[in-house]
Length: 262
Image 1 (cartoon, rainbow, N blue to C red):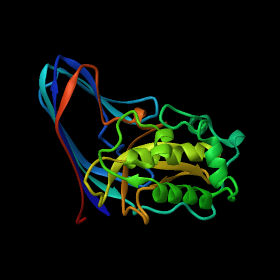
Image 2: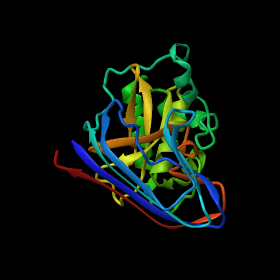
Image 3: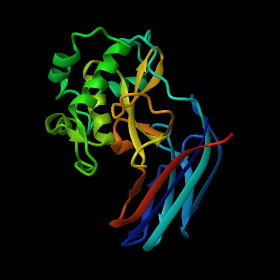
Image 4: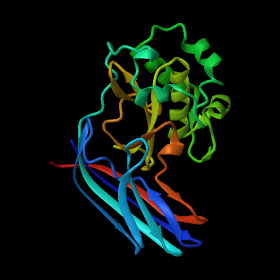
C-alpha cells in the first residue's frame, strides 16, 4: 500500500540553538520504500543529514533565536503489518550479533533488571518463542490503561508497571523491559502508524527472533494496518523527534498519516 505522511511543528527558541531532527525514515527498509520526500524549514545556518550511532537518519541544524518551524512530507510504499511468525525461534545470547545483543540489556527507561522477578512470575512458565512475546503484549494491553496526557518524558517501565497507566511510549517500554528480562532482544521504534487515533508519532517495539526483527504493538488488540519506522534505539531517549540544546517552547505540532492511491 502507499501512504502519505506529513509532520509540521513550530518552536520558540530563547537563543540560537543546535538541534537534531529525526522525522525522515530511511529511504529503504525491509518493509517500506520512500517514493518521494520533502523537508522545508524556516531559515537556518546549518542543515546536514547524517546517521546516528544506531544507523538512524538524523538531521543536524543550527537555528537562530526566535521562531523555528519545519514541515516534512513523504510518500511511502509499505507492506501490510504482520504478526510474528508462529515458528520464530528465540536465540540464546551467545548466538546474537553485537548490534543485537545490546538490546538484551537494561536501559534508562526499560529497567529489565528491576522487573525481572515480575517478568519471570508472569511469563517465565511459557514456552519461549512468538507465543511468549504475544502473551507479554496482551498482558500489557489488558493491565495498563491507555490515557493520553497521564505520563511524562521521564516515566519508566517500572513506573508504568506500578501505576498501570500510560500512552504508546509507556506500553512499549514495559513490553521491552519484560522481553529483555527473559533474554529476548527488544528495541524501541518511533514511527508513523496508519489509523492511529489521535494522530501522532507512534512508539512500538521490535523483537529479534528467527534471525529477524518483528513489530510488536501492545496498544492495539489486532494489527495496525501499516507501520513506517523512523528510528530505533534502546528506548525513547534514543529516538526523540526533536532535540534542542537551548531552552525552548513547543508552539504547535501536527502529524498526519493517510492511505493514498498508487
